[in-house]
Image (cartoon, each protein chain N blue to C red):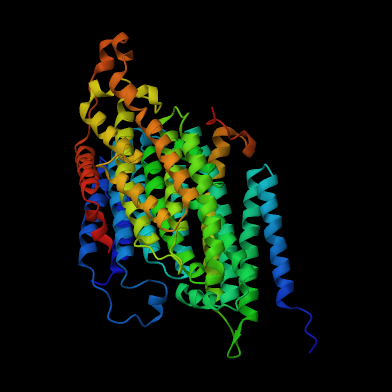
Length: 496
Length: 108
C-alpha cells in the first residue's frame, strides 16, 4: 500500500464520522467515537504495512517526502495521540454536552458531541501530512489544517468563559505566528527561488550567498515556530490556552502540536545548517532561545497550584530540552555519535507516553472531583490506588527518574549537548531537571500523605470510577514508559 | 525602457504593510481590528511572493511556484476568517466585549 493512502484513509474516516453524526439516527453518540478509535487502530496497523515507491518522479512527490522512517514514526505519534484523545473525549462527554447542547425542543440531547469526536481525526490527518511535508507549500497547508482545527476545538465549550477566552487567545496568537511564517517563507522563496526544501538547502549552501537576507528569513520562521512549540519568549499563550481548553484538547495540543512543530523545526533548520556561514549563527540563536525557555518554563512551573497550568509550564520546560538538542547540531569540527533528529524523536516519543498518561488521569479524576487544583487531589491514593500509581509513574517520567522513559530522553539531550561542548546549556538543563523533581513530585504529597479527607464526610472517600478504555490505555502507557526506561532501544528501533 | 518599478519597491511596500499589521496587532485593543491587521500581515506576505515570482525569471517565464503558495494562503486566510469571526461572535455573546484587555479571568 502506498504511504500516502494513510492520510486519505484518515480524512475519509473523519468524513464518515461526520456523516454518521448527521444522518444516522443514533441514541448514544459515543458510537461515533468508537468508529474513530477502531478506524485509527487499523491505520496504526497499516503503518507497518506501507511500501515505498520505486520512483519518486512526478509532481506529487515534490510535496511529500519518500522513504523516510522518521516520518512514519511521527505519523504513529499522531495516530496514537488521537486515539487516546478520543478515549479522553468519551470520558469528558458530560461536560461537553452541558456546555454545548442545543436547548431547543426536538434537538438531540447530545447535539454537538459528534463533531467533538470527528474534529480530532481531521487534525490527525493534518499532523500525519505534516510529518511527510518536504515543501514550503505542503508544510504551510498541513500546519494550517491542524491549527484551524485546534481553534475550533479549544473554543468548543461555547458557554464556558474560560474556553472562549482560551480560544480567542489561541486564535490571535496562532494567526500572528502564521503571518510570521508565511512572510518568512516568502523571503526564503525569494532568495532561493524554490519551494523545495532540498533545493533550498543546495542554494543556501552556496558560500557566495546573501547571508543577511537568509538570516532575516530564518528569524521570521524561528519566531513562528517558537510560537508553535512554546519556546520562550513566545510561550506566554500556553498557560492560559492549556488551562481554558477542554482537557482532552489540552492533551492533544501539548503532544500532537508539539510533535508536529518539532518535525517541521527539524526539516526547516536543515537547509540553514547545511550552509557553513549560517550554521554557527543559527545554532547560537537556538541555544539562546533554548536557555531562556528552560529557565522560564521551570521557574514558572514551581509555584503553580492548578494541575493543568503546571502541565502547561512543564510542556514549555520540555520544549526547552528539545531545543537544546536542536541547538546542538553537529558541525564539521565536532562530529558526535547522536544526531539531533534521533534525540528529538526519542524525546518526543517518551514525552507522548508520559504526558498522555498524566492527562488521562486528570480527565478521569475530573469526572469525580470538580476542579483541577492540586489540592483537590488530596487522598487520591485512598480513593483509587490505581490512579495514584499511574499518576506517580507519569510524574516520575516527566521529572526524569531512572527506569522511566523520561530519564533516557533527558540523558540523550545532555549527552548531545556535552558532545557539542554546549556547557552553559548543559548546566541550565541540569538545574532545570533538578527543579523538575520538586514541582512534579510535590503532587505526591496531597495524593499519598494528605489528611484532609479524614475531616470530611464519608462520601469524600468514595472510590473514583475508571472507564474500561481509559484503564486499558493507562496500563499500556505505564508498561511502555517502564519498558522504554529499562531498554530505550525499544523506541529507537521504531524509527531507525 | 525606463522601468521605474524594481523589486526593491515591492519589498519596501510589503515590508511596510507587514510592520503596520504587526503594530496594529500589538497596539490595538479591539478584536475585530486586530483580526484585520492579521489579514494585512498575510497580504504583505502575498505581495512579497508575487514580487519575487515576477522578478525571478527563469527561461523568460516568471517563477510561478510563488503563486501556488499565494493561492493556498488566500484559501487558508478565508478559512481562518470564517472560524475566527465565529469565535469572536461567540465571545461577544457571552462577555459582551471585544476588548482583549478584558480577557483576563484565568490569571489569578
